[in-house]
Length: 113
Length: 113
Image 1 (cartoon, one colour):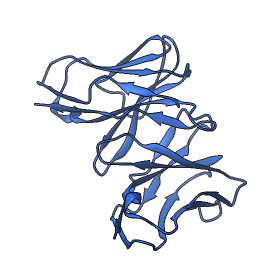
Image 2: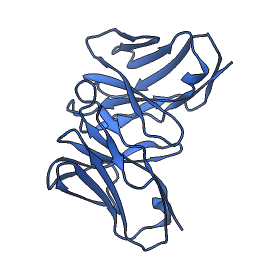
Image 3: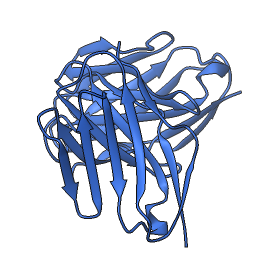
Image 4: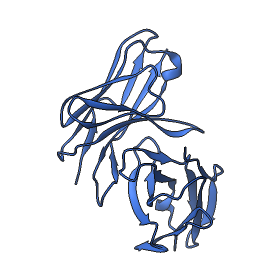
């Protein structure tokens, strides 16, 4: 089975701090994604990457950047965290059971104080 | 862009009954539609994918229908069990390549013993 691992399950940061959220997948998938999930708003796509060093903006990229230096690793960066970035962040890899299916990590719950 | 509506109110049913969840979308009909299950504090897990030329898809106690005329998908769980209690998300692919999956807000299902 594809495994998507998010290194941090819970983080608490202060406003203005730089935050790195890391995600690793073990199935050599090309495409990886970062979503955030908020009550009442569902999952919203922040960025995705279809290859090493390649990235595309999703629906809500403002305040975020990403890095894909190796195929298996996709990082989400908050350059200067703000309280409105308190959320659950979900990483996913494309290519689970069947075509065009996402396999998600367990999520990283970030609280910005 | 595609807008997806799922009933935001929780669905409470008795064990053994059939649960039916609804996913409505606007605009164009996608090539396929997906359903995911999400448990509290965890990432979504893929359940079923149905293509536009398929009226119905089954997997064990799960059944999904896809009506492109009504722009609606129904997700059924027969002989429901307390272990089926979770939030169920539907997702549509905006570019038919899996890169722009748009998720509904999800419907929480509670199965009472």
